[in-house]
Image (tube, rainbow, N blue to C red):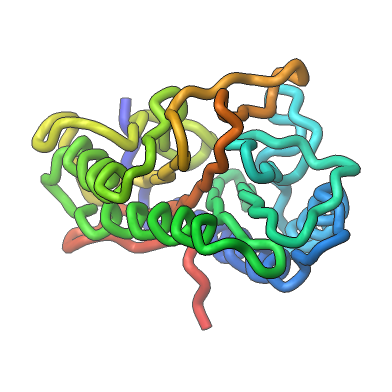
Length: 250
């Protein structure tokens, strides 16, 4: 069942989204060669808690981090640890915050220092695919129309769409219905309605689409070791379009 949120609930989600966005801004200024993913995790957790929220991922199904920190060939669910970032790396940081019982969720992929043109193209295309999907979010649009728009941007650029991991509904639970694949046939799937809250998150691989999970039972990596990127926003469907809840407001 897809749950439509009340204006009060969306108010809590706006605040959760603000906290997530500001945490991203803080980490973006902190990412540099030599910093460890655990240091980034600690900075994020301290800030989230300072805002009266809690990290959504901390303890979720046993996950030890406050953020997911996935480097280079790591797609998602990277566990923060002693790994130091190197010049030219890319790192996908997924952040969730729970405020008064409601969640915000956003991921972004960052370059560490100077990155290659190929890496920058991967980041650019993944971000473009996210906004291509968001541009279609409005009432009565069928969900897989959004999925198809994301897929077209990714595959037209020669990259691969991940099949095993998808976006999701969000609200009082971090993961709610519906599941939101990044590929699909347009004009299929449930119709969007005002009050729906969605976490839309393209996950894109520069090489082949196949992935595997490491022995830590969390970190997902590409089978061919090609690099990947991950961009995500939490949005609410409004009567005339959508509101990005995890967007920075200056």
